[in-house]
Amino acid sequence: MEPEDIDLRHYLEILWKWKWVIALLTGIALLTSAVFSFFVMPAVYETKVTLMVSNAAQNQQSIRPSDTSVVDTVSRIPSMTLNTYLSQITSPYFLRRVIDKMGLKDMTPAALAAQVNPQAIKDTNLIEVRLENTDRVLSASIANTIASEFVQFVSETNQERMTKSLAFLSEQRDLLKEEQAVAYETLAAVQARPNSVTVLTREIAAYSQSLARFREQLVSEQVERSTLEAALVQIEKTLAAIPPVLPAAPGEHASSVSNPEYEEMLKRKQEKDLLAAQSVARIEGLKKEVSALESSLSGMEAQLNEVRNEEERARSHLSRIETTLSLLDTKMVEAQMAQSLNLGETTIAVVSPALEPSSPIKPRRMLNMAVAAVLGGFLSVLLVFILEYLDNTIKTREDVARHLNLGTLGAIPVFDDTDR
Image (cartoon, rainbow, N blue to C red; front, side, top):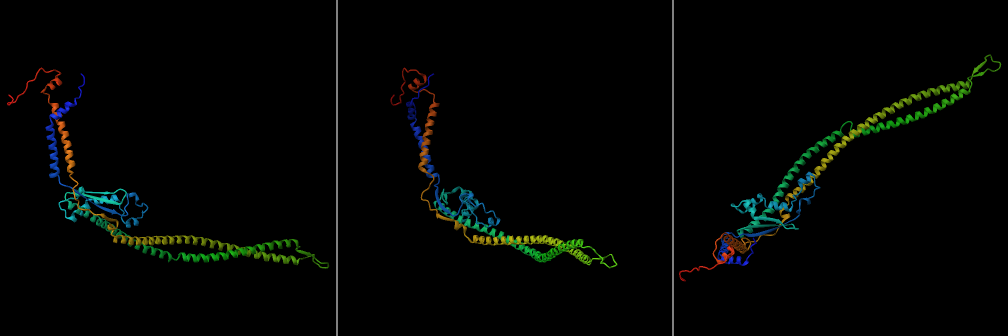
């Protein structure tokens, strides 16, 4: 079975046959759209207000991450990004402020949020707040109220945060004052002890002088002992060379007599031995004194180091407290200045207030009617082709030839009453 050729004239004949239906349905769609656009759908007016934000970060990463100090974090003026401002404008709390300010009792924050469309203008620090409302006067009034209330809202937020920061800083300052008093008492107690750094330093100096003196005496005694030992060695050599006795002179009865020189040298040797023994005793005594002084000095120096470290820790702790107190005082002054600063008016300015719109943006009547006409025409044509497809009756010779592939012998004319 061969595919049936598409006959464009056949489709045009169908459209012509149903032209009044197509025209009627298209007209109904057009008329319905006109009625809804002109009489049913309310006119919606749009207005906008433009805000300029100073010192706002484009994103959160631009905020300095180096300020990790708790004091810096608490006392820092709030730094808000453009996205933060946009979120605040559409927050239910802020929109409730606007509603209460204008006395719009029948409006909810959600309904107002549906009318507000804030957006940041690309590559600028401008925020454009668009507002849609069916009342042209009310739309401009709401937009301007949002702008003025937002400036006030940012200022109040800063005031609240700075008040909390001041309270926190003041509390910490009082605690540090108490800790400073304790640190002063601790340092004074360390310095007033009997074994304080000053006393120990003075005693160590006195012991050091005594030790130096005894060491000099010890060296002197050791030199003297060495001299005595050398003299004894020489005397012993001399004694070895001198005979202890001398032969008797002729005519004397004794065979020998003692040598006076030897006796003298022996006497000198005994004196030197006594002096050497006394020197050894003195050296041993000096060594004991030096050892005792060195041991005492070592203990006193260890004690001095311990006391000095303790005093240094007390001074360091007091210095840290005083440094922190100075930082707290500085931050409190900064927080007081920030509290007195109207941050809203400083960082946000209304560069273009909202004006009363002259014409509505919705509904777009001509566009709605054009779309309705196109859709009505399309649906009517689709309906006509569906009706033709469902109609399987044969009415004309062309239907016989097309559907039955047969010729016709004749046709029975139809006459109306007048023709008959």
